[in-house]
Image 1 (cartoon, rainbow, N blue to C red):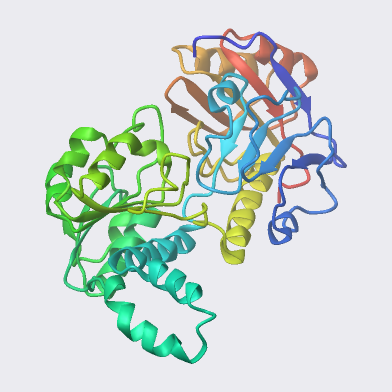
Image 2: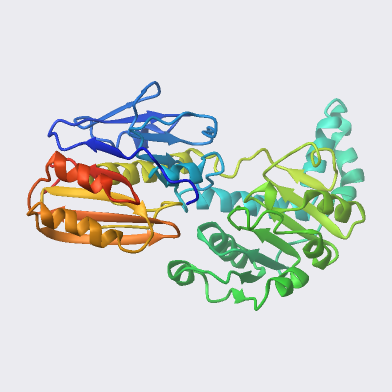
Length: 411
């Protein structure tokens, strides 16, 4: 981290009746919010000194964060609407919900495959245009339907780039529809590998997949490193007459180069969930109005997942599915738990444990995890630390945040 946090935060949360304050942005499913226990959580959209934020697509980049803020939960996978670096510097954990909307996105990708293989949309528009023709409609349909014909996707090759929660479901769905499927993901997780059908061919290179596929579906997380991932060079590699589907992020594709390839008919169709002025008037683009996660089931799933993650973090310090902090879990062994966020530099752990030892406190259990420039510690103590001990922990150079967790969740 380039800018050290000068104000170190301590929130005394060891009172039995402590109430965590969670501020909601957007409309978050009640199935998720109902997970927070009413006796220890206050949930509202107008809370000033919140311990946590829960949101969907609301943009937080211009928001002022209260010093009490410890966590932000995004009910969805993408976190472009959250200033993650700013959060990391302040010791604020950012959670997302990978996989919670995977089935919803997969179903829309399947719809995109079918819509791009035949001119279904054009055919529907044509039928609407002859709605006043009365009894002539059947004969007009028969006379003009040939202009909307296409081809079957069975037997065609589907290339899936990125085999995470969504990509692996898309790959498996392609197989179920009779397609030949190849996938590319050099960083596939063990869990994803177990769920991926053995009939999916693992492509040896991204370039090979692009050249050989009739349909290419992109499922790559967006970051500064992946911006323009499908660039002009890779677009030129696409098999002539193939279709590209992008239900991840519009910034992953060089859309100006894509428009050129579409107009020259090198690429047959571009199906995207992210319309913009460059795309909407092009007859070779199917622009879907960002419906990937727009199902009641997906919204419920995301809300439930993020609420569980925030509840466990606020009550026990557990970190699951964070985009800026390491995954961390420690089963409670005493009623007295402290969590510490610090810069990931040498000798801090020794200083922290020395402060605890000098206070004649024993460490029952401890977990230390790091991710890039940040480290996170969960420490169970045999007795409650005094305010003086907390102050000394805060005074350790490189420590960003210290939390005393509530006692009442220990059992």
